[in-house]
Image 1 (tube, rainbow, N blue to C red):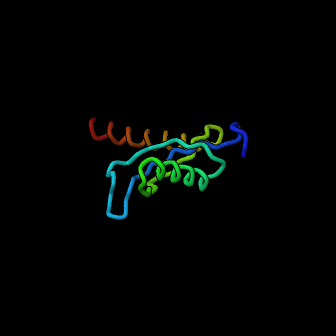
Image 2: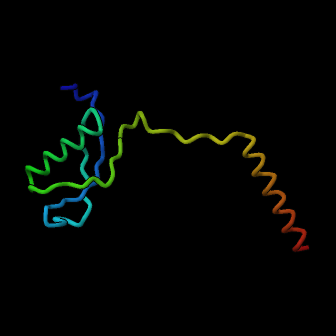
Image 3: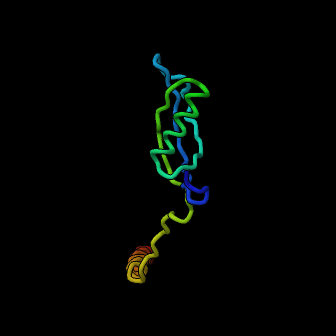
Length: 99
């Protein structure tokens, strides 16, 4: 088993089902620590099967480790200049129509 520091954290949204239909219509959310997405799903399935006896249907899996979240790209100065020129042209047309 891996050390607790090397495990990834996953947020899993799921619904409960039985052979006869939906057991719970509402979406549930659990946070699971595992070394991979597949292991996180297996851990959640085994816990829920013991607790309620139904099967789960996964709606969404999201990795929550903060070190791997992508940062937003900064816009280049060229993009800012283009936006400024377009804004100035728009303001000039508006001033021309008003006066």
